[in-house]
Length: 411
Image (cartoon, rainbow, N blue to C red; front, side, top):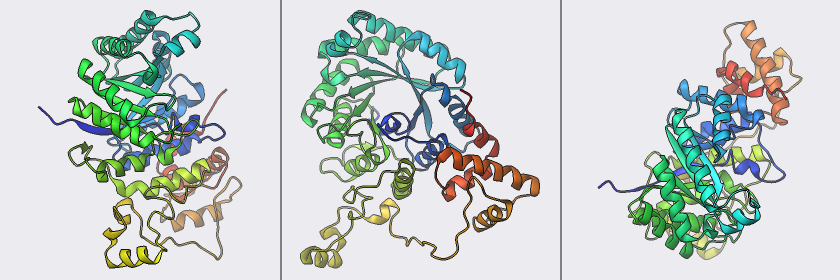
């Protein structure tokens, strides 16, 4: 029997962008997909296939999969678990290969959200029909989301999951939608569910009680202990609705360095060295600073001031540091120009634009190509509403046709 593993499905581009009062541009979402791919994350829930302003972005990113820019990561779309939504989504995004289909399962939601439109059995029927339709339309994988699973009657949750498996679902997403689980309750519930249904479990937790990482790890342990693979849902920097989702870097660190976690296997593709890069980028893109005490990437994560601590860290870093900053891609000096700075913005001219790209060591084959990329960079600045970082500038130059699609919206 193959030893079960823990995989990461990052939901920054779906749940993270649902954070109230903030947003990401389609270019910023694309860059996060690229960085998540570099980090070895199994799947990115990259958006909403039924939302029209996402259509060009979603199709453009699937082109990046086709041309191997996104070489290993899967891109998964989020849909309501209804047959009509699945049909409509595949008309807009025909090459979609991975989806998660979501429907509420708790009495609270069925009674007080659906208001009589659905009952317990019709919820299962809607879900099963949507799974079969997604499979019929050519998906490679379907995850079924039990929204509010943590407040769902256990017998009904098992019945729901068994029906999903029978319909062809590849995973069940256990959603602690209100963040009301504890590590103890989620372990017990997922262990029972996984043993009863024998299907891989996604663990989707929220941080309303400050337990999101602990709950995610406990849920993954429960699935693995029952002999099933686990998929933890994360967001970069813990973004997400209300108090946020499980922080990507914290989850990785907890699996690698938590006591009693050595017997559990994290997806071997995960590359923690990208952590510093992706967390800084997400902070800039969202406009939300990384907390000073954030695990691994906070300004104080490796800072020592107390005499006893400083002395101990200087003698042997392991005295007061559980893991090494180099593992997270930290340690190299970051140079900030304090003299003349030419930037590429929405009103840039060709001379300043060429100066910026010369410093990036990007050479254009002729003036026509340079003019085309300049025009796209102008649009990109309008699109982002903030100056482009070097990786964004490089992306636009490398994939001008895809960039054009990403920037295009037609209401």
